[in-house]
Image (cartoon, rainbow, N blue to C red):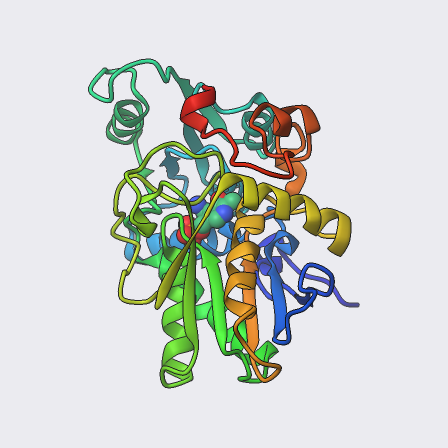
Length: 330
Ligand code: PMP
């Protein structure tokens, strides 16, 4: 019989898929690493496994302990799955702007979700930051993974995503493109690929226009899960050779094309990464192999990116002209 003992064993070893339609006119091979094949539906399952196993090994997380993390998204799902299998409790802290669908997903996996008001100062006792700190202090056996500063976040990619790409491409990968959020994916995968190729692989970050990684002020944008208004310590600025800034409009239009033309129902940060990958690939030859990492599925974005009315509110479906910036619309 062929079966796995635990859902945790299904994390990683995601497939590479060649993009055939959106790459029209491009000579390089462009391959997508499709991370929604992970059991929790995103790349973040990888860091959840590594961060929890490292905390067990160091003693920071003890049997029956509680994982407390301010997250509403993919990292929460990954942590919830690994935690339930290993017998830990999870408490996630989310701001009240997070959709009920996302909160319900975390609760479905058995996690507790504490919702905090967005309209209070960071110093207020009920703020997102203060509530999660208080929960860590007051919950016996609490451990906070803190994906923004945890070295096991990039390490998980150094140990899994990087080697998978090297093997899957038989060492022929020439460019690696990924969105930058905590910086774990690009830092860990990029470092591995640079080391094994002796510096031959070029690493390109994709960033929403406005975010600090591409020189922005941290102004608002709509692409979720990527870009920052601060520099997290999980991000190693030495790894990317280049950062490409992508607008919300371009990212979301490409996200819709990936669903319609490539059969890939993926999230907005995937469209963003593909825009950056094509920007890079259009200057390359048939000898080049560009791999772009697609972090999650499009199921979580049906009422936004895949909803014409929402797209029209921001002018994202207009064929010409610039679209409204989030700050102008909100
Ligand atoms: N896309 C999505 C949807 C994400 O949730 C994340 C994680 N924040 C990323 C991209 C970026 O990954 P990383 O944190 O490893 O930079």
